[in-house]
Length: 75
Image (tube, rainbow, N blue to C red):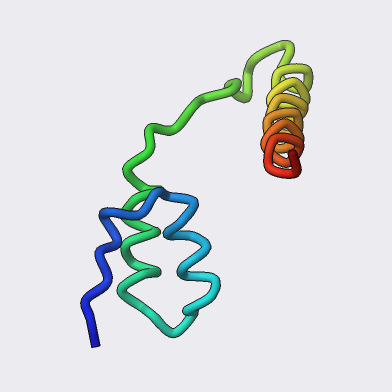
C-alpha cells in the first residue's frame, strides 16, 4: 500500500479525501491540523453595539462566497 501525501493536497482535496475515507485517521488528523493552523478572524466582540449587523454581514459574505464557488464549478 502506498503512503498518502496529505501535504500535497489542497485543503479542499484533503477534506474530500477524508469524507471518502472516513476510516483514515491520519487523514482526519492532517485535516484538523491544517484547519487549526488558520488564523481566527474576529468578526465582532460581544460588547459591540452593532454585533448583530456584523455577524449577519459575515454570514451573507460566507453565503455569497459559497454561491460564487458553486456557480464557477458548474460552468
